[in-house]
Length: 415
Image 1 (tube, rainbow, N blue to C red):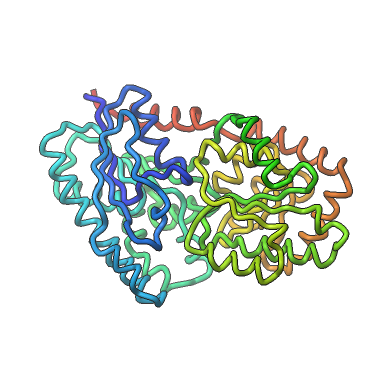
Image 2: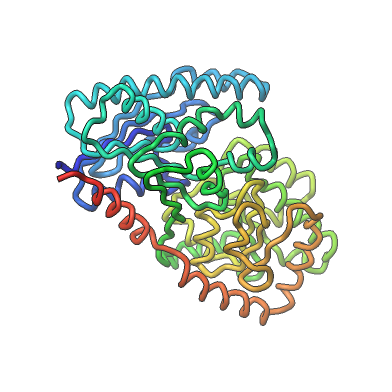
């Protein structure tokens, strides 16, 4: 059978976040596959792509179309109608992708159809019902999920609104891959589809130690990091990423430890719809000397920013085991985070980092631990030493992670 694959996705490539979207099809190209990538793009100014240019990776045939009506998201000021409209746009997106996928299937002999996330997977499942997938390997791929949180907290309205996610997870593909990102996707998959033929729960890979010394020096000089204790977060600036929590931690630290106030710097790497609100917080708290908004940076520069700083901060609502935290582990940074989802599988308090209960009033505790780190170099050495040993045993490189996936898919090809 030919090694030709069609990815179907409602999520476009990004240069400045979510590496796996681009790295996955690229891995198939690098291993001798012919790759077509059918994708829809959100063109709204309040989405995740307004600061990203369209990308055409080498060797990948990209068929890119815009979501219908996504521009309307910019003119609706209230959250509830915007949420409803966004859901309507996603359902319409399934129909769009279905139309374009059927057209590609007429002129191409694909051996694998790869549904990326819930929209792409729904399209592949419909194609199977329409009997357009004969003799093809069908893959469903999820980057993680909020569904476990909704289920455990009995948020039935949220579960109902995400019925399309439920239907995507119900699909019996030949291979289902769920990212182990701390959101406990394996739990909800066992509830929704306990008899899946082949379910893989894999953590993402991380890049090897790759930083640019000149860029590290440039960052240190620009923000005067050599003479300061430096914190960093790396994420899209969205409400649930809770960068506001770190801003409040810095505020409390500066209030409780005024002698250290001018020794602390916090770099916020990332861009998003929440930036204006966060900038206003920083101005309100008079922290413009301590907190700096770097903006979005290319993925290949993130390791240099991590290298330049000492402490990685991640206080998301849902789970904190995203690629930024894994990369911070690989870069052997001191990590401060919350114990939600499966984050505690990766970080042990005062052993491989600092991890706090989201149920407690943790702000002062984090501020006190920051002061402890500034005073105690031996504590830093002990934590980073433990983290280095743990990371070497438990982290995949991207090459190892994607090699495992491609080999698994190829093992399902019919000769």
